[in-house]
Image 1 (cartoon, rainbow, N blue to C red):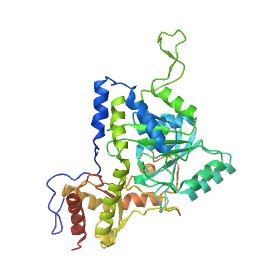
Image 2: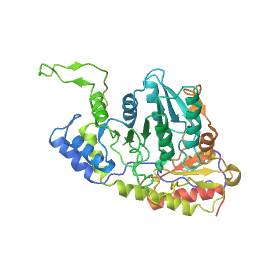
Image 3: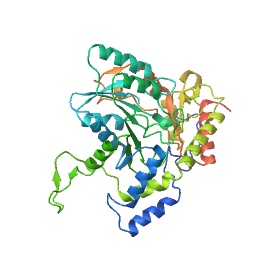
Image 4: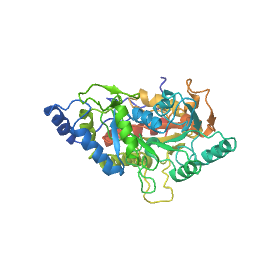
Length: 394
């Protein structure tokens, strides 16, 4: 990487994008699992986690090995299969899209709106109206709540209900967010959450599926443990009448998630504070624009700022977002672009995409900065000073 007088001296240790932040109770729950030898996919932590998450969401749920597994089971619950189409945002991580292909269905990608960076409700309305006229409606719609901000759910839900289409909400990045004082992931037919190592709270891995339909949750739980049926002989002679998977969360991981769930609100407030420090300290940097917080006309709406995201105007800032990411990396600061749209990925570039210019622009100009809830103010000051130096702002 070429250097110039603006290049910051590298940080003594890598400042990472988003790291786990333990709260203290996790050790107790994990120790109990070891002490009582509950080290499989059954146990008290699993039962307690599902009950505690149910109180948070108001919905029954099942704890699974990953958010991806939850999406896969969710699509199967919605009856998605070979030849079906599923509308899904193009601006997302591949883990949201790949489960559609697991069921040999076809994704139809849809562009973002600039207010939320999530699926554009107006595009969806026009697309579904056009498809209804030719009797080619998709099987389902999926939204992904990106970076801690909810999609605009009311108009999306209205269109889904108009055409009797189910809605799956991927809220992997938005635990703790609010949409008009409601929790994203709980308004549709199925909601999915993730406890991956870089998320708002973590189990090191893990996910959870919720639904207002208890029978769907029960089916997902069965499928997650290889779809084992009750044995008519009563001797645990394994019987299987449908396809299942090894998708259940372990009781040990559930213990970590339980401890993390106790500090969820603290983690949200800490990440919002990280973002606010960036926003204030970089407000005078030309061409460096924060991701907007959409309030949806309601004071109860909230962006968690899981990641602190900004847009770079190359002409005003003095370099592109990609160059800034490279220069920060040379300074020992981890950052990354906003998600690369799925319709530009080699594996998905031959699939239909409705629009695409907004998501491509967000990917081209977007940067995600270190956002950990445990990020020290000294480390954040280093990142801020590095950006100001690279922008040529004293």
